Length: 143
Length: 143
DNA sequence: CACTATTACCCACTATTACCCACTAAACCC
DNA sequence: GGGTTTAGTGGGTAATAGTGGGTAATAGTG
Image 1 (cartoon, chains in turn cyan, orange, yellow, purple):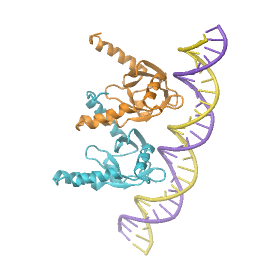
Image 2 (spheres, chains in turn yellow, orange, red, brown):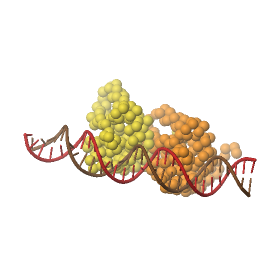
Image 3 (cartoon, chains in turn red, yellow, brown, blue):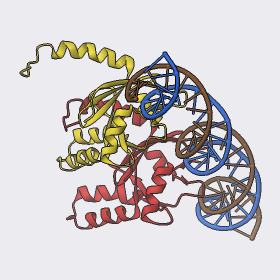
Image 4 (tube, helix red, strand yellow):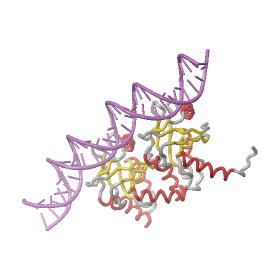
């Protein structure tokens, strides 16, 4: 389970450390931590999948009847998907396309989301959170 | 059952003692006291769950039909959730994100809330209490 | 093919965190 | 009241996480 928030800095080469606790979760899937990072159509952020979760998403996609909407979805999600293996320091070098999509500059926010985790530009994340607070304020779920 | 109010001081490293009586309650759930601390959308404070309660919340979330409101709720609550195990002195080191959200400075207020307990900045708590007095003044529950 | 830009891989440094020990003050108990 | 226990607090130190940068390999370009 990916949970918790972390923010790390991207260096001049475009590398960011994956938070150690997320790396640990990835290790429970494979000895060599592997992950697939891609765009998400819902927000201007990236989503990271462990290999197994990614397979599940692929299966779900291929079980869906074709449509223009699905093709759009695939172009966004599948086409930009890239496989990463963190270096010995636990960092990955994100492709310019991905960096660009989420407008990552320096401070990168990692947010656990259960089976996956999200990668945001810090300032986008802060804005999103403000908006979310308004939305969720009156949402009762037995807290 | 978590009941009662306590206020402890956060030290320079960002550690706060969990009140002993709350720790005792946690021990009744697991030998090693474990707790999940996260934000709540309702107020600028944190909520602590014993593991079992947290699982229940997760179940309730996954049984709720997806909506924008739910996604907002998840970003607030799930993403920031962190698991803690108090050190030998009964303290936890709260993450900067959580500290920030509840604007915890030095004096931290703990308030029992039955199955969970809340963590406030003392001065926010005092203000909230004032407001609550007004709200609950005419609330009859057969006392 | 030569040249340049990019990437992978390694090492070194710093900041942060986990873990341990020690002290003080309050509560408790004969 | 004096001794004992327990809660809360402060701080040192070893391990870990994160960051910066160098160099060799690789890919891309004219």
